[in-house]
Every structure is written in structure tokens, then in C-alpha cells.
Length: 416
Image (tube, rainbow, N blue to C red; front, side):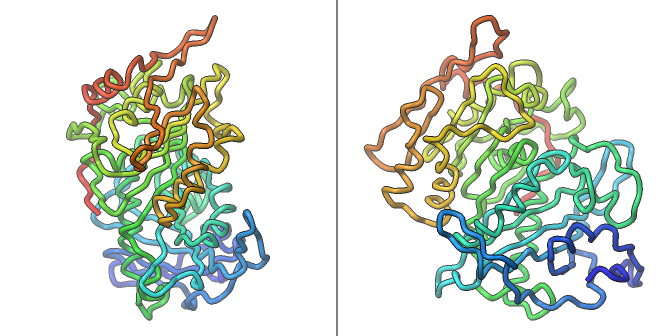
């Protein structure tokens, strides 16, 4: 697949690109399908439409991934937006993605919902997302793992090593506010492949873009929360799981001082929300505007949303952002149940029970869509004896007001 590289049509002419960028993809056994908006790209030789299955049968709770197709590699170029990274000048915005799906689970009149995994800075979370993707595909999702062009670290997860070898530039965290637009763009491009007979075409009616959920980690979690911001309107996104994310703070003196115009978050949008947040997450403090701001802004945003919504806090003063969020045993099944209920439509008592399994914990908050079901939206205390605690959300109303009063500066609007 990778021998000889690929040819890219650039301004009407073909140029040969080295293959180094595709080594990781080929190691995954992915079919390479490339294309884009405003720039046509084709594999050399043309890659056939995927017909294989995952090499080994795997299982997750008895769910077999034997019939899953993938990973299939797509490469798109968004010519309507630019990619910039600190001192590097703007270029057309390249976005790659891996896709997995089980065609045997597509039922007449019942396309698959879409589940997008959004990685963090430096490709954080990608190994786990790629390992889990075929298992989620076997559960009945059309799974997409996009590679954000500026916040990755190693090929093919960073454009500046993607199509030609070269030094890895600084991780471009400044670009994170653009990534919600990347998610919408990839979703639109993949939707255009439905029913297509061209390379990279997907079966007609395979997935429903209007039932799309996103699970993001760190910078990817910030990306998911941006769908509550007017910068990034996309009604197709109906469920977001934010793992160690927060509403970001822009403007003078912030991490994102150059983005505009000023837009406040709108947490009244109808998006099912599950948040995992650390009281002492100093990385999110930086993103939120300063010491002690990350957790209050996260809880404040959550407090302003309507049901269904779930919030799990880690109040350990030794919380480390760079390690996976420590789910307690009682909540271990809650993330899967969240997407099964609000994307797959499995509105059974079993999924509700899994979401409320940790309801007795002092660090878990929830409000379901079920009339009469238990609800707990009380404030979460973060202070710890002998520890300089971050500012604590003392009430849901106060936390929500704090978020509304501190708008962010973001990139130009992108509507999916």
C-alpha cells in the first residue's frame, strides 16, 4: 500500500509525496482513501473499497468485532479555513481520519449513529481510542478518529510531518479552538461518501450524521464543549462526553488572546452531556484562564445545561491530568451506557441503572431525562485539608453565572 508514496493533485498537477507519513496507518492495516474539499487526492494505486474484517476476533462484554471493517484512512483538505501554528504561516487545513464500522449492523431504515473520538494535545488518548474503536463499531457505531492538524505530535498526527519529513514543531495548543470546525468538516466529508461508487465510498444509508456523539480527552474534551459555543454550531452533535475538559477562556492575558470575536458559551443547547473533571486539574486551570478556574468553569457549564447530564468529579488533591481519569467501579459502565442510551437509542432500565450506578457518591451529579428519576445537581466541594484548593463552585446558579460572565474569544464561526 505504501510503496512509492501517494500522488496528490495540486493545482492541476500531480506531485509525488514520500510515504513516511503513512507508515503508522499501514502498520494498522488501514486502507488508504484520500480526498478533500477544493483539493482532490487519490491513492497510487487506487485503494479498493474496504471489504476485509478485523484480523482477530476481539470482544468487549461479549461483543465480537469479527465483522468490523477498518481502520480505513481518509485524508481531507479544507481549503475554506487555514491551519496556523505559532510562527508557521497559514496553509490550507489538512485533516486525516480513521474509520471503523460493521456493515452487518446497519438495518433497513436504521443507519448507524456516529461516534467521534477527539484526541488531546500531542495525540493524547489516540492509542486507546484506536484500540477501542473496533469494539465500539461492533456495538453498532460508525466510529471516526480524526487527527487534528495542529495539536498532534508524531506522524501522521501532525501536518508538518505529514506530507514531508521534518522536525516536529511545538505542539500547537493555540489551535484547539479550531478543532470543533475540524470535527464538523470531517463529518460533512464522510457524509458525502455515502452511496458513492468512487474509492472511499460508503454504503448508502450506512450512518446517520444527525445522530453524532463525541468523546474527547483533554484538548479533545475542550473541542467537544465548543459545540455549546456559537462559534461552532452543529445540530448533528447530540451527545458529548468531556474527559478532563473545561470551557476555555480567551482574551488578553489568556492562552488564546488572538481569537475573536468574543462569544459566550450557550449551555442551554440541547446536547446530552457527561463530564469527567478533576478538582485539582492544573492543566485545565491554564485553559480556563488562571489558577483555580478549570473546575468551577467545568461544573458551571454543566450546571447550566438541561437534562440529560452527568458529572463525575475527582476530588483527590494528587490528581494528574496526564493519566486516564480514575473511574470508580460503580461508574465504570456509565460512559458506554451514556452513548448507548443517547446515540444508539437503548433507553432501557439497564442503561439508566448503569448511568446511576454511582449515584450514592458525594462526587457524582446527574439529571436524567426520565420524569420522576432521581436528580442531584448540588455543588461539589473541592477543598482538602492542608491543600491550597481551587475556587469551589458554591452553588449551581453561582457557577453558571460565573461562566456566563466570562466569555471566550474564539475563531470565526463554523456551521456544520
